[in-house]
Image 1 (cartoon, rainbow, N blue to C red):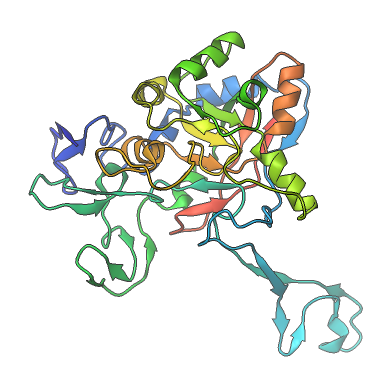
Image 2 (image 1 turned 60 degrees about the vertical axis):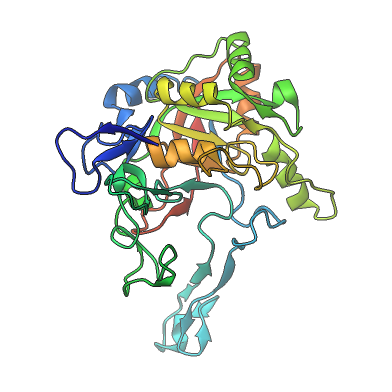
Length: 353
C-alpha cells in the first residue's frame, strides 16, 4: 500500500498510500477534495438556479423506522426542565408573577449517523505504516493518527486503555466540513431510472453508459448525487411500518471495481452523495479485498482522497423533476452540523433549481 514519498517532510507520515492525495492540499489539510469547490465553482452552481424551486434533500430525522445499523438509534426527544417542571407550554407566570408569556423548549439524544448524514473524513481509517517503520498504526486521511488526533478510550491494536480524554476527533472532525458551507454544483445520476429498485452493483462501464445516454458530465469540484430509489422505499415503510422492507434491495456503486475507483480519483468530484445507506453497494459485510478492506469506496474516498460521503439523502423528488425538465445539474447546499469533534452529522440539505 505504500506509495509516493513526501518530499518536504511531514511529522505524521513519510509514505503516503498508493493512489492517495495526501499532502496535495497542504500538510495539515482537513477537508480533502472539498478544496476543489472554488468561488468559480459556486458561481457556476448558482447559474443552475433558473426556476427558484427548492427541494428538501433530507429524510425525517427519525427515518428509517427499521434499524439499518445496529449501533445507531433513532432520536429520543424530551423536554427541557426548569427545576422539576417540564418546559412545554410552560407559563412564565409560574416563576414570575404577572407574566403571561408561555415557552416550549426541548432536547434530543441521537446517533449522528442515523438518518440523512455526512461521514466526516475520520469516520473510517486504516491500519497503515505511514512512517515506513514496519509498525502499522490506526491512521486517517492525510496521516492523522488514532490516540493523538482521533481519540477514544481503548487502544485496540495494543489491547489496552488509551490515554484519558477528552475523546473525539481533534482533527478531521465534521466541523471542518461545516465551515466550508458545503455548497456547490450537484450533478444527479438516476440509477433507479435504469436498474429500478434492485440489488445491483453499478460498475464503471454501466455508470458511464448511464451518464453518456443522459449527456451527463462531471467536472472537478462537482458533487455527484446518485438516486437509487431507496429513499422512497424508506419513506413508504416510515409511513406504514407493516410494509415489507428489504434493506439490501437497492443499487449502489461497485466499490470493488478498480476502473470505477480510478474514475472517482481522476474525476475531481468533491463529494459523493446517495439516497442509499452507504453510496457503495453492500449486500453483506463478509467480502473484503486483498488489503483487508470490505468497503473499498469508503476506503478510497475517506482514507485516501478526502472525499466526504453523504448517505440516506432524499433525492427522488429532485431527480424526477430534473428528468422531467431534461436537466441533471442543480445548486446543492448541505452543510453538516458545526459540532466540534464529531465523526459524522445529520444534515438538512437543499437542492435548488
